[in-house]
Image (tube, rainbow, N blue to C red; front, side, top):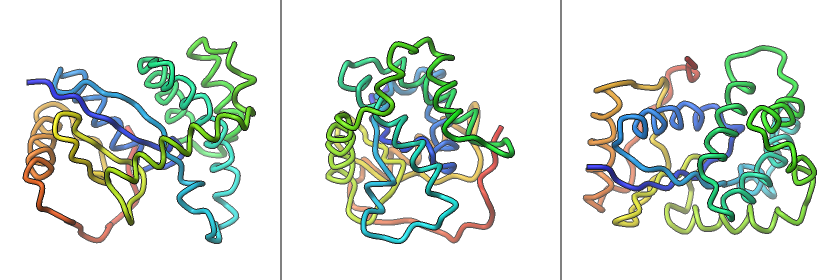
Length: 201
């Protein structure tokens, strides 16, 4: 049985990217219907000192999130999914990334050139914040990107944070376990220390 899910994400997060490819795999299997929605690590880290190496990637993500929020408002989920796929493919698993250029090229690759001016339209920051606040309201506090929500029950969690993307039966099994825990409604946290960086395929 297919379940509707909401996936709140910041496209610059590598761990989120890995989880998103799992969600995409679930959609291909017909196990979920996905609503892709923005959240922002820049907003999440307001008032905190952010290491310099993250400033440009987060600024690039801020531009992309403006378009994602606009598309979400217009219920253009397939375009968000395509845009995110192009962003992630450009951001992760490659060296010497020009993050700003990746955003611009991703928009062109999914034939959304007419929205190029929206990347730098700060008016959309209000919408990004509204989606971000919604994500935290269903799964917070003390969470980050991504947030996965089951639409039918409203249950939401941060994650799952996975090191690599499961495929086929492994993907389906993981969803059965994760959604089962979410449906139970009493689990606050399950966690183990990270043993390495995410892997991309």
